[in-house]
Length: 370
Image 1: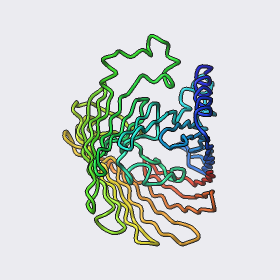
Image 2: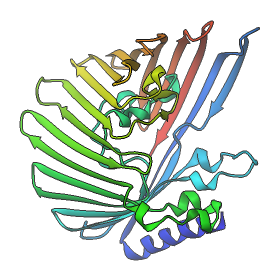
Image 3: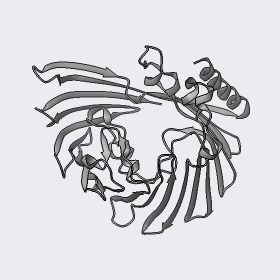
Image 4: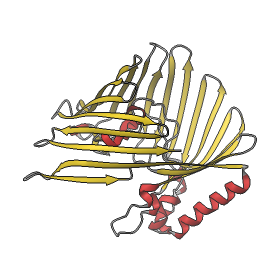
């Protein structure tokens, strides 16, 4: 813990001395599950609270705008506890990096960004609920990154090269992460030199005016490599944001991502296909995202459909989530409302889950950002 505090203080002091201004930002989110069914026989009514996505950050940029740094803490991890009841300090760093752009065509970044770099998705991951998981059971489904490759969140040296306006080349080299592994001991924390170069990402993107952006991605991991192709556009149809991705694992391996599994009930699959679309017709719209596994056995582990309407004084959303559609389909029905008041956002929703004998919950959330 002392080592982590020393690292954070050092970064803050160096940033304060090296840069002209330091901006401080924060987001405080409080979630209250007013009521939920708990247990199975007999069912009881319970409640729960959490800090949600509460964070505070320090950002600084040099006078010439070509160098900067960012340090972000996850507040819920600061106040969290591990199995021994002590603060889980190794997880509080959401972002800790320094970047330098010596020329317009090259940008270098060193450190960790858990929010992710090189992410080609705008609909299928965070963009789907836009930070409103407090009233949606199952949340953001971050595992979409395994169907539309690109997200890079490792402690690393990252380089972005843009030799021309339409062409982008991203490279990330994953490094041993002392911020997350310092408590396991020096012997276990030392990575072999040859293993370091197995954790890489190489990504090439090309933008065609009026058509969209195409991405080819290679992810190298010790557990197995993956390649992916993806496409994103907001140019084909007015009001339509569309993306589709194809991922192929070069090693037939079982991967577990959150509450869903690449391969669904089949367990082992090498092909993943992701699709996301959001059509906004002004006051109303509908969005959907679909993930499909294949090769050994076809499965659809998740499908979200969300029509929405803006009443002016508040927004209304109605999400239907279907899991394991091809095997043992389950449904989550989730209407909720969102109201913005200046820098604050208020949310409330109802969720019904058909898993087992069925369960329901009433959820509220408040978020203030500055």
